[in-house]
Length: 468
Ligand code: MLT
Ligand code: ZN
Image (cartoon, rainbow, N blue to C red; front, side, top):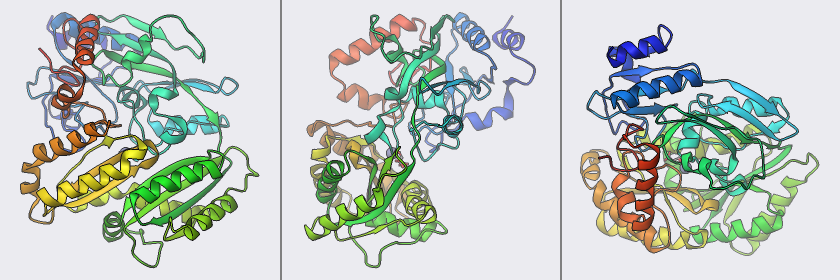
């Protein structure tokens, strides 16, 4: 029997899509890639995933795991051959269990992140991963890309939020690792291999995740600062002053306030005058009685006197808080309204961030004078989206220089001890970057692991590592 016939025998009617109906699975979120596929499989159980993978392994057909399709690097898009199978996890979407006393839950890979957050809140707990795409991205994708977001400085990245994984291996075996243990020193960290592997070593089908106490109080401020250096100093002071209760600390440049107020209905500049840089910062606590607003106001007052900040507004209601967050969260969307741009996802040690911004901005001004720099992001993690935006009618010219710009900025990050991919992963987009920047020994180990776990090279071929 041919592969499609075998797959039809495994999956329920309607769970194998072919032809035009495959369309939504063939283009990535940023529209960088447009692939073709043999079919799209939508299994409903781990057993079905396993049988589908076995069939593909036998037929030597590539399997492309697909979650909420929010990857910035084309990690979930099939290649142009039309020979790969897209394996969509959307129907494997149960919360299997919640254990409030163990502060953990087990979710299947196709659960949308927002649903996992809701399941935790319903049980009186908190799941802290928080991303702009949380209404559509799926846990399997979050795990496979080791997603970050706006709470990393307090809770860590996805890798830090996992207790155990269930994974279907390339030969169809199921790795039964859904432990709820916080301590388990029993040999190699096999589970860790699949986090950030983008489906190239196996298909994550479920995860045991860490929960935290619910946040009962928060204080949010939009703060004008003279420079990224001032932002870094302010973060260090706020961490001390609050007893490490800072849960978000996001850098926003003036141009992002201009773009969001121009393009996003309901966004307005919360401060009277224009300032070169801003920080959106939030303190959060599990104690309802914590006087966070007073604490934040006092710390900002001291910073103002010290000349560290230029102005600030503290949200007085949930509505005001949401309005401040909307500025930050709609930066990527406002950029899309302005036309084509170049995105980067660099990280450096937090203390080196001001230097990266200064040297990066200098390079951009000297070499790409037509472009507007939109450098924003997660200061607390040393992670910036150092994006370039074309002026109208200059989009194609900027895109044509993408390679050169990427090289300069990634070289600069590397020179400062940083990374070219902080939280967006490698996918297809950054395979050459990984080859350039990963130490040769590490790259060789990655290939060895790939060969050991996926000898036929069927798992998401060409992503993370070059195939063949
Ligand atoms: C963000 O932090 O907003 C995203 O990770 C990056 C982006 O959308 O450019
Ligand atoms: Zn980000």
